[in-house]
Image (cartoon, rainbow, N blue to C red; front, side, top):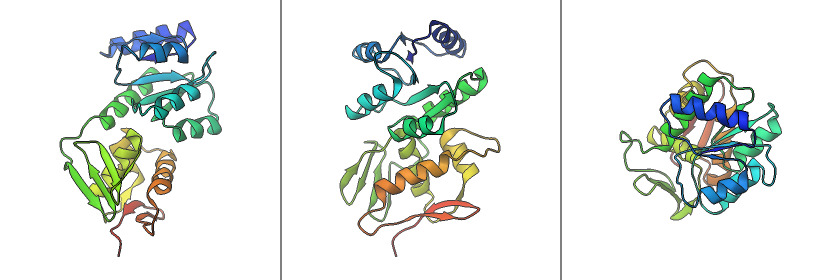
Length: 222
């Protein structure tokens, strides 16, 4: 679902995504998107930040507050770190800065869809100390209490726990979670690690470790 108030951008996104093999529906603003979501269940939402009536931030906040975890790619008109951080913090999965390259947009969309889909190679049940992951239920619990994670947070935690004890490089995590296979200076891994720590470092558990200059690992409690 494309949510953007600019007809030219909607037309470009529609043409681009259909050529790439996706089916699309469109909404002109956040309110229209909420109405459309009553009858459509998209695999991904592409949401512009700056829109009248209801901007992209408010739309994502409403979706997440109603427990709608549909993956979201946000479009921002400028590379404003405050906008990007806010978008990721409220539950967006990734962002693209306007004007964007068509190839980059498609790669990011495919990466989001890949990491939000069930991974058949990953064991259905994983654990590390107080953390348990039930992939059949797409559920994470901490000492039995359910923890609400975005699809990206879930996938990152899943990889860390599946390979617990191993130090995973940022490049490996960028590839596995975000589909970025080239050398990148992106800080998105650090950002999402901090999100996981805020939700999971509690009750004496501090298992997500930074190995300076190398990457990250999760460890069983001693």
